[in-house]
Image 1 (tube, rainbow, N blue to C red):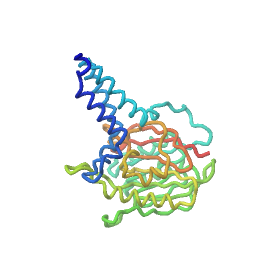
Image 2 (cartoon, rainbow, N blue to C red):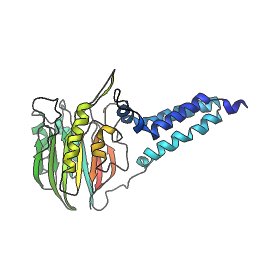
Image 3 (cartoon, rainbow, N blue to C red):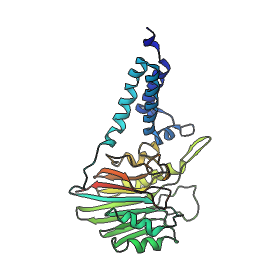
Image 4 (cartoon, rainbow, N blue to C red):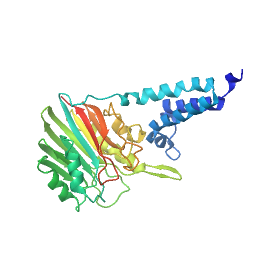
Length: 310
C-alpha cells in the first residue's frame, strides 16, 4: 500500500497552496504586510501547482495528484474567467481606453504617443508626465484627441469633450513638496456622460522587513473617498495604482468599483511583466476586457481596456 502514502509532503504542499489561494485574506498584514505581498503575486501560485503536478507524476503519487485538485479548483475559481476570450471587436456602447505610466525617463515620448494612439482609443490616461516630455505628448496626440487635461504629472486625452476638470488630492501626509498625481474630469461620450479619474498612487517597495506600502494604502483611501463622493453615477478610474486588484491595499477602490472581467494584462516591469499594477476600474459600467500592449520607452507596459457604458 505504498501508493497510498507516497507523496504525502507533496499533498500537504498542495493543500497549503489551496489554502493560500482560497483564504489569502486571512494572511495577516500586521508583520511586513505579508498579506498584501502574497496578493500581489497571487496568480503565480498557479505555477506552484504546475511544479507540484510534475513532482507528483515523478513520484507516481495518487495521494498528491488527488490533493492537487484543491488548488486547481481554487485557482480556476479565482482566475479562470480571466482566460476566457473576449469578442474580437468592441460591442455597442463600449469605449476603448488606454492607461500608461510613460516614465519620466522616457526618451521617445512621441513614439510612445503614436503607439498608444494606434489602438484608436476614446481615452488615454498618462502618468509621470514631466515638463521635458509633455510638449511631445501634446503635439503627437493633439490632432486625434482634441480635448485634454493635465494636473501635475497625470493627464487625460480624449476624443470627447471634457468639462469640470479639477485636481484630486491623494497626497499622503508624509510626502512633502509639490506632489500632484490625481485629476477628475467629466467626459461627454456618445453613450452618455461619465466621470474619469486619473491617478498615480505612491510606489511600494519589497524590503527585508516585507512590503513597504503605507503611503500607497493611504493614497488609495483618499482616492476611494473621492470616488465615493462623486455625484455622477458612471465613473471610470485609470491609473498606475502600484497594486494588483487582489491586493487588499486597494480595497477602498476595488470594494466600490468593477475590475476587468477578462485578461491578465501583466504590465510591470516591462522587461519581464509579473503583475498588473496599471488598472482600469469602473462604477456603473463593465470593464469587459483588458490587455497589455507592446513595450514603449517606459518601464511599464501600456494596457488597453474595453469598458461597456451604454
